[in-house]
Image 1 (cartoon, one colour):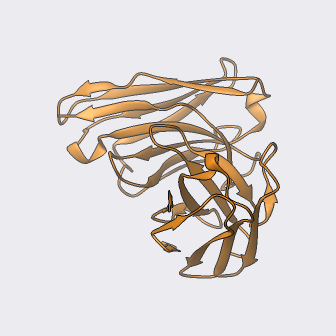
Image 2: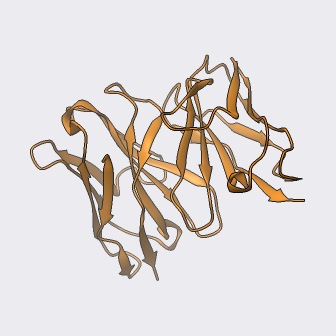
Length: 107
Length: 120
């Protein structure tokens, strides 16, 4: 199975900060990577697919990059509604695997 | 509006069975692969199962293979997850998710609100 490792596991940031989350795959997954946002007690929300393509309706302050084994999710200017947990997921092969999550908290 | 609505969760004894349902609306259901993803209390997301748009190909996580069966009805716009031989570690919120395209695996773009399954 492909292991997905996110870093950091949590971070503290302020509104307006630039935030970057890293996701590493244990083997080459090309660009078959997605990012999801989840708020407490809510269903996940899809943000990015194919490493860098924004899902419909997702604000442009979110961006993704990378290929192969190293990927990043960047929030260019953190907004109050962005405090949440973020997950990466590979869909290059089955089983689809998620990273352990990165919790973005208020500083 | 594109929507997925899960139902069927509840409390079940270890070794018992449960059938989850997911009603889809707002899109051409038969054109998209569908999946189930679960989240144990306080834990991360875990992919459980996926089925292709036609239902001809179905995939399972090792943790549920042989105990869970995923199916779909393209006439009723429904997806199901039949869960047998349930264990305490199956306790989780189960989400139905729509794949971006008709091929699988793919990213998810739409998620349901989830249904809680408690095995105790």
